[in-house]
Structure formats: C-alpha cells, structure tokens
Image 1: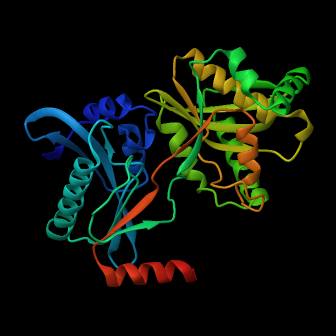
Image 2 (image 1 turned 90 degrees about the horizontal axis):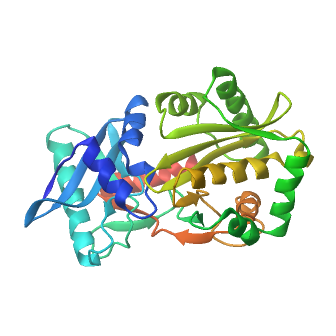
Image 3 (image 1 turned 180 degrees about the horizontal axis):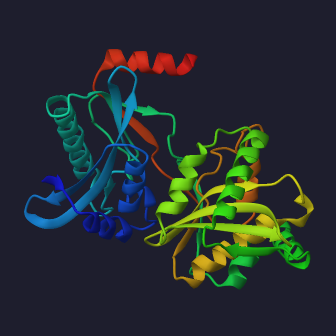
Length: 333
C-alpha cells in the first residue's frame, strides 16, 4: 500500500536505516522546494499492517524545456534491508506506475522518465536502463565507533603527519555560526576551487540557501591562519551519519596542510556527538591516475575507512522517443 506520509514519518524511517541518507529527509525536501522544485513524499506500507512502513522516498520534479520533465528520487527509494529483492522491486514498480498516472492525468506533465538510486539492485522492471551516476555510487566511510587513537593509527602516515604539521603551524578550525562573512568566503573559495580542479560547482545561491535554511543539519566549518581563511567545508548531519558534502580551498598556504586538520576535527566532532559514520561522499571508481577524481580520492583515502558501493542510478523510461531525444541533446550541449 502506497500513501503520502508526514515529514516526521519520513525522517523517522530514513534515519533508522544504516548509513542514513540525508537526501531522503524532510529538510532536503524543504531545500528542494526552496529552489523552486515540486516535491512529493511517499511511504510504502505492509498490505497486512497499515502502520508498518516498509519503504519511503521523496520525489523531485526536474523540469525540461517545452513543458517536459522527469522525476528523480535521490538515493532512494529507501527500502528496509530485510525485505527480499522481489518485494523491493514490487514496491518500486508500484511507485513508477503511480507517478506516471498522476503526472499525466492530474498535473498534465509530460514526464519522460523516472530516475532513481535505490538501496538494492532492481531487476525485472520494464524499460529500465542503468545510466551514468547522478550521485556518486562509490564512497568512503569511517566507522566512528573506533577510538581516536584507532582512527589515527588506520590513517596513512602522511595524513597523520600533515594533521600534526597543521597544528604546529597554528591552523585554527572553527564550526561557524554561518556568519555572512564566512558564507561569502566559502562562495569565493568554491568558485576558485571549481576553476582550479575543473569541476562544475552549483550557483552561489544554492550554497547560500543550504547554509541559511537549516540550523540543525547543515554546518559550515573553516580553517584559518590568523584571520586568513584557507579552506572551508559544508557537512550535513542526519540519522547515524555525518557527510562531508562540499569543500573549497585556497591556492595559498598549501604548505600549512589546513584541509587535513579541518577534516580531522570534523571527524572528531561527529564522534563526540555520537554519530556512527563519517561519509566522505564520493570517490573515484578506479585507481586510474587520469580519473578527474583521482586527486581528492587520494586525499580522502588517506584518512582510512572502508569503501561502500551503491547500485547506482537507473532510469525507468516512460516515453522512448523523447528519452532518445533528451539523451541526444545532452550529448551536444
């Protein structure tokens, strides 16, 4: 049985799942709405027990030109691990059919496909395609049940050295109150970082809305020497996990090793606040040194931890012709 659920039901369920996914939370739903997106929130209940929640998800509408669009469930649907794969597939199939009907009949939206990132490998779903990752499917996790001594011991020797070096050279790290000056500094740093490391960053308003809208879940950390901010990170806390989501750094003062100390103190804070896991949010899928993620993957792996691989991203195609056109246009722009 499928029905709309409350924000509290969504958060209680999503946060109860091991390695909780902040993308399937009510505050992420609110954030998407603040960006002008249409969002739905659904739960899947046991047919024999209307109070037993088996799965949940938020669904975000992504608009395309000419009144077209597609639907997206980030890192979801989240479905209980103890269900067998056939039941998980059945639940997902119900969701895809329901939303195609709702969008066509009620909202007059021409949705081309449904993009989702389940916590299981889907099989036997009609018109399903494995596609390029939307969110990273491979990440690095630290187990925070270990002592600080154990965590330090499991790091690469160079990472431990760089942490101590940053401390000796007077680097200060701060969990800010998201003051305007620090948000502006982060925006300046992320713009420089994206150009230097050749990746596409979000528009400035995206980070501003994220930082200003959420007091409890989103934090801005900085590392500075005297009054000069050298690097800044955005982390997100939800359920049992703290996630390092966005990082930015200056080209100056590289020899001070500030990013290493900043990560370590974020990890310590997460541990002190009784979170179970610290998620570095995305690493390269291979050890290929030509991979554009190789540099920051090497940085993250220096902290130890274990790799986690998600099934990846899938599209359920509603309209084959427009889907082909969509993918063709994506390749040429």
